[in-house]
Length: 467
Image (tube, rainbow, N blue to C red; front, side, top):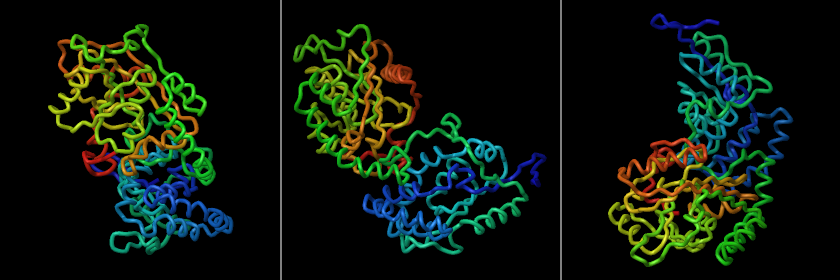
């Protein structure tokens, strides 16, 4: 193996293929399906799914290049370049990481020189991930022909990077890099463990939880009518039935709600003395997983709470079984609103200001610690096997509906010991509650904010989003 040395220290360069080497699988249908669905919509995704038998026959006949060209055309033709870039940045990285080979990554990351990757996937779909997560210096991928700011769906010269053409590209790079040891494809590779990811995967977007392989996407299509029916029935049960009956009815539909209370349950289950000036309401503070968090807390304690939130859509307000109050992001106005509401009953607030899908807690806004005397932290986890109930780029008013469309959604709530405001600053109280919630459910506390999330995923601060 030849290598180049710089400044007395050996800095070897490396070149390898993406699919089949860094990625365990060579099957690329799922990645094109994600691009078709998230950037193009459900009709385009359904079209790609319907031509899968043809794609399979082409690959079986040894026409892999033609199959790739057809997938590229159906999934990208007519799409805006910016939309493809957004999907490549916000949606695809999670799926790439889950298929990243443990052994290949260890070898690849051990090289300190230039890193080159060749892929038959369009470069626009892989370059953001490779450069951000794997520190790749140069990506050689299939190039697309563009018309103005849209993809024509056609492959530009020199064509699809597959087979001999891909090998030639790798060997050419290796000659330039004075390197002769590309990573060979490995059989029975194990995926990279989450704790070994090159960098934490904090934020990602997209509606689908599982890799949309042909069988998985077929399962989604078959479940969709039942999913809509399940979501509508769960919403109606939550609105029309009393809390105890609603819990039982939800369980019948497959919706699991589990709550764990501290020993001093009376502190949670005793209703507030509404309207009495001698006692202010209790403020329930929880981490934010979906729009349903306040509703689940109200259901668990079997008492109606008022939820304060930002940018709630009209649809979300209509289907909510508890009162919702919009905040303005004006600190003084919002503080006055919450103080007034606490004088008449109990409130629930999510101080992160936005949802986070992964096991991390965003920074807690200290505003709640300035206006409440009695605070009950609630640690929340929410799980769905088919759909995510949150989005950045999609239709946010459908968030709750998508979560409730899961076959067996699950909410777990852990109520912690109540906290009374003391001499600590509001920032110290907020940070302390964040740590308590993080410890209760094993989530890592961070200083990231709503603005950071939207800047990473959508390129704006998220101030004007409407749910």
